[in-house]
Length: 147
Ligand code: FES
Image (cartoon, rainbow, N blue to C red):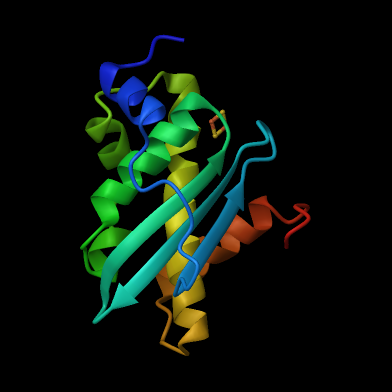
């Protein structure tokens, strides 16, 4: 696989890797086709993502995209973090082989789910867009054991 220097950098020394024990939101997603799984933990204060960490059980690109996503989302408002696209992730990594683009989608889904979890736990209003995205993710993963 022909990975960019940035992908290999994030893979060999991932940023924000690990768990936040007292997290405010947790996103857990997986891709049934490749078997990769991601966990994104967020700590929120005053609507800002103060801290974000991830655990990824998967391929080189899954680890690199999770790492770069946490860099992009950290210190952003929740609304701005939710605007991060797969193209933003790919651009931050220089490039991704086309067959690995779905790894960046998985990272974004994990962040989406962490925010959704935070909103539910805090009984905050959920936008129609976030609800729809959550439902799409649930539908895609409906046979996963954690659902
Ligand atoms: Fe599926 Fe990377 S190969 S997330």
